[in-house]
Image (cartoon, rainbow, N blue to C red; front, top):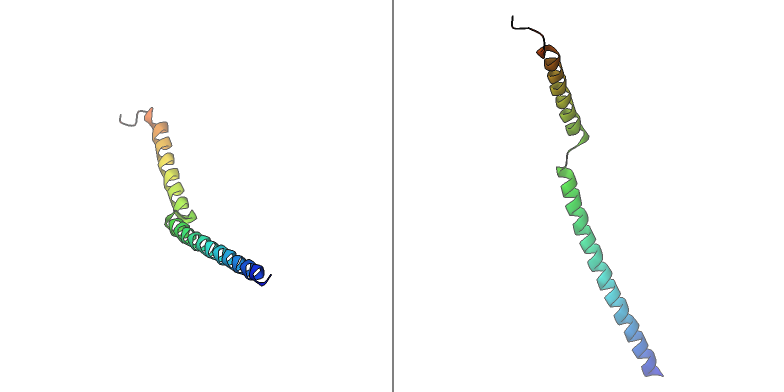
Length: 77
């Protein structure tokens, strides 16, 4: 009976160690992925960048619409 108990304890210990190793590896990989995502996120556009682009597009569109409105009139007479 002692050998069965020792074998059972050794098996549970081995399973626990393997489980801990697997969980540690998964967390390490998740940390690496999170660092990569954070790095990519820091390189993306911010709201201020998008606002500046939007302002520039609005200015260009306004200019084109004003040019379109005066295009049919005889400005060069």
